[in-house]
Image 1 (cartoon, rainbow, N blue to C red):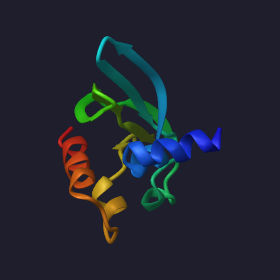
Image 2: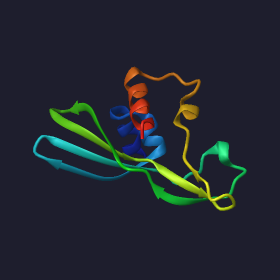
Image 3: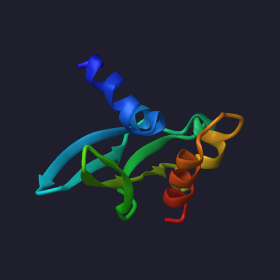
Image 4: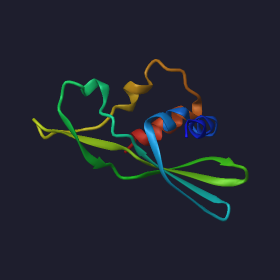
Length: 117
């Protein structure tokens, strides 16, 4: 299965493949929909807190570059956690994750899009 992930990293932002799971895909004519859910790995910056999975934020749909003549839509669901002690909802700060990394303008636009929700 790892060779499929390596192939996807060449087609989609590597960040998406590393932090999200592809849970579903559909193709209707020349339109492809890829559905991603954030992996249930608690944010490193919150390691001192006791967090439990608490569902997802509203799904965000992003139109990506066409693949082999197909229009591509990425459906992304970001995860949230609940602090068992304070009952505060916690989510990953994607600005911290991307800080200090080199990224393409497409990847930066992707991060900007998912951070709006």
